[in-house]
Amino acid sequence: QVQLVESGGGLVQAGGSLRLSCAASGSIFSINAMGWYRQAPGKQRELVATITSGGRSNYADSVKGRFTISRDNAKNTVYLEMNNLKPEDTAVYYCNAIYGSALVASWGQGTQVTVSS
Image (cartoon, rainbow, N blue to C red; front, top):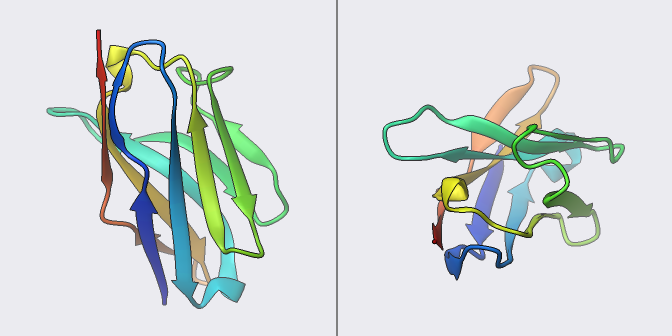
């Protein structure tokens, strides 16, 4: 199993920046990809960005050019650098890992990001 712990959320003004961190533990050698998703009140959870074990990244159109996902394999940590934040970025952000041959999904507990206008 893989356990995930997020940190780094908070309150920021529009145009500001935040960096989220997600530390993985457990069967980290079996992780295929990690990513960030978010869920705003009354909305479905949506993909923000993903990164494979080989370093290939993918972004939602709404965050391209503003957010950057990266990973530090030595620390078993994935980061989400968020710049030029907008009020519509307000949501609970969840870290996700896909691991094992069965492609099992593991989720963190979520961290709140609030962007004020």
